[in-house]
Structures are given as C-alpha cells and as structure tokens.
Amino acid sequence: LANRQADVALRPARPTDSNLFGRKLSDIRWAVYGDAQGRARFATSSDFSGERFIGFSGNPLAERMSAIHRAEFPDGTVSTTTNSLILTAASAQQGRGLAILPMILGEQWPGLFRLSEPIEKGVGELWIVCHEGMRNNSRVRIAFDALIAGVEQDRTLFVGDADQLKPHD
Image (cartoon, rainbow, N blue to C red; front, side, top):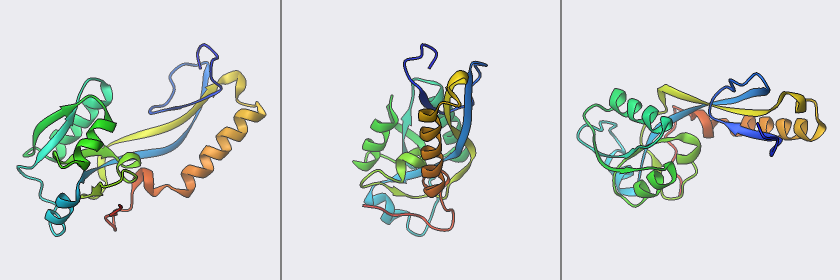
C-alpha cells in the first residue's frame, strides 16, 4: 500500500500510518486443534495437562501464540516448533501434537478438529486497509463491501461458537 502497488490489504492489526484508512473486519480468536486421535482423546475432557504442543516461533505473531500457550496451558510441553502457521496446522493434522491456531485457519483445515472452546485471551484482529486517498474509489469500495459482507456471513470462522466444538473432515 505504501508504494501504491496494491489498492487493498488485509492486516492483523489496526493501521498506524496516518496515510492509511482501515476498517476492522473481525476479532480473531484462537483455539486448540488436533488430529482424529486427539478428537477421540478429548471428546469428554479439555484437560491438556502434559500434552505435547506444536510451537510456533520467529515473529511477533509467534510471540503472541507462545504467550497464549503459557497463560492457558502452562502444563503443556512444546515438543516441536515451526516457523509458519501453515506448517503448525499440517503438523497437528499429521498427529505430531496439538496446535493453538487462529480459528480462521483451524476451522477450515482438513483433518483438524477443534478440541477447545475459543480462547478469550490473546484475541487478534483482522483489518481491511487502503490508502487514505483511495477510500472513496469505487473499486476499493466494492472490495471493502464484499469482504465486510463475507466476514459477517462467516463470523464463526473468526470467533467461533463456544457452544459447539466443530468437527470437520
């Protein structure tokens, strides 16, 4: 956006540059995900004490995930570490441990099952952003409106439904 090479961007935080205009699309909650064996093990319990977790490292988002892990599951051990949420999800799907993932990723990943309610602490955000001068451009307005409508339609992908653990294949 700063170099005017794109009209619209999705960002995980409120824009701080005064040349940018943004609208918050949604909060993003995280949850614990695992493979089918994890689903069977935790069908009646959400006690993750002593469980192996897949860690995520290498950037500020990873630091946020690690803080969530330490706060919510202090007795869980990190047995493997990746440098990407995609690798973390794939590793969990392959049975290498449990993963704390943004719900927008975990709810759609084939072979992963949500094992916990949405985690209330450590909530992230999703913003749609454009250059201030482009905010009234019709193309940009159409993109904003379409993304806003899409998020509203599928809000549970971002923040979950705490009353229902969602299995998916």
